[in-house]
Amino acid sequence: MSAIIQHLIDAVSLGGIYALAALGIGLIFGIMGLINFAHGNFFMIGAYVIFLMSGRPVLIVAATTLVVVILLALSSDRFVFRPLRGAGGPTLLIASFGLAYLLENIILMIFGGRPKAVDFGHGLVESVTIGSVRISQLDIFTIATTAVLLTGLTLFLRKTRYGTEMRAAASDFRMARLLGIRANRVVATAFAVSGVLAAAVSFLLVAQTGAVIPGMGLIPVLFAFVATIMGGLGSLPGAALAGFILGFGSVGLQIVLPHDLVPYRDAFLFTLVVIIYALFPGGLMSGLRRQGGERV
Image (tube, rainbow, N blue to C red; front, side, top):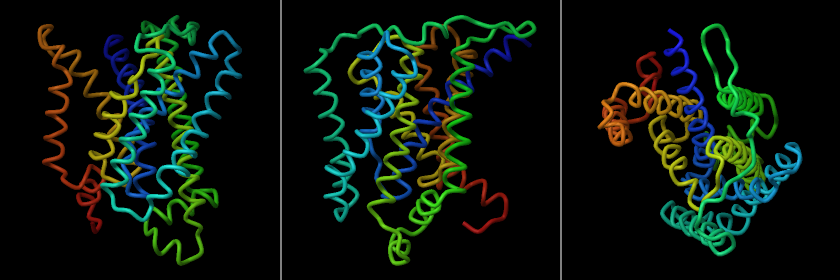
């Protein structure tokens, strides 16, 4: 039983990272119809800020990283995506790829391609014992961070004026503009919120790996993209749910697969994803609404 509880905690912790990453992508897509692949590079930039600030008080590191990543997200909107807002989806997608490669090569030129150790989160290495279960403090921190951010994002979207405007724009962007909602402000707010989520993912990735490397955001953003599609494009609850499903699937396969097949875990995981796509072509939330009798 203790082993099962430990595996469940690991799955929730990993799923929380995927969910936060997927929400950052889903938030922008819901409003702009843009899959922002540069979002993974926001994780990388945040991680390198943590590397540069390592050794300083945690609150200062956290505040600096948060500000830098939010400013990066806002700058990407202002100087890359806003001038292309009238263009089609493929143009925006290519622009996001271009921005991603630009950011990665800037990091390569400044820091080189070798991994660099980061003295951050070492206090979270210890474990705490609850009954017969030993739980990593890092898992507790990850789960708590995810819970706080998911709750905060939900309250922001439902209880604030900016959140209401974002939900209206995600529902019908053109109608929202006709009703007086300022498009630039809504999009900028969405990018700022995605920056907050990206900064949080940066902290969790650095705390787990203890190192930074160019391109470190590629795998998380890939899983986030898969979760966004699997949950249903434009559905934030679906993106979060799919992120947790990927986390549970990854940990579950790590446990049940024979030792020789563990290196191919992701291949099995994405096979399950394909099966889910086949069962729910419109995404998980679309399938759940259909089963609940709601009109899709």
